[in-house]
Length: 219
Figure 1 (cartoon, rainbow, N blue to C red):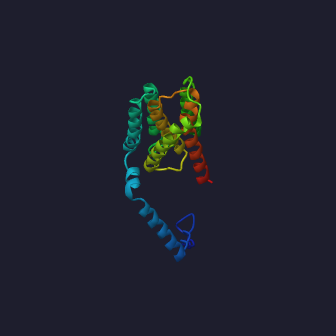
Figure 2: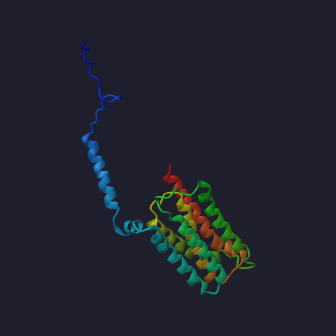
Figure 3: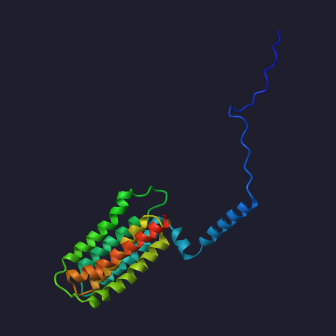
């Protein structure tokens, strides 16, 4: 006994594939322009630095920090302070530049690093004893310290693959630590008040400004 053949059934249990959406020519042109703009931005020294392996980027950032600490240690200030703060700055520089394929540090760690750096610098400053109290003496260290911190932070920005991430706080800590390492060795004035207002305030201001920029960029 012959049976009638079953009706046609689609081979896919999910049915026919959905139709591909048609893109508006204006949208395609905008996408292409954005892509070309990003490709154009990946040129120059910063693009070359960002493309280097992470150990190379860390070395590029840590060497100037070590140089500032060593040069500062030759001054009339505290050699131990310059070298110790320089080591802290170099370690923070290494921590702030992580391979992009690795997971980010936990949020608690990223937020704790700046506070630990600030506590270390402030703790070093607290043992300064007596020293100058006039504003001019503080500014003579604060001004060059901010210049050094800005230069190191600019180098960090050039090496960082995600400069607007919260790793920027670790980069700012490294920059402020480098400035304090230089100042600790070159400045012979000492004094807890001077070290706090003329030296440690550099790190504090750099952290505050960096946090404000990061918060605004992530809005």
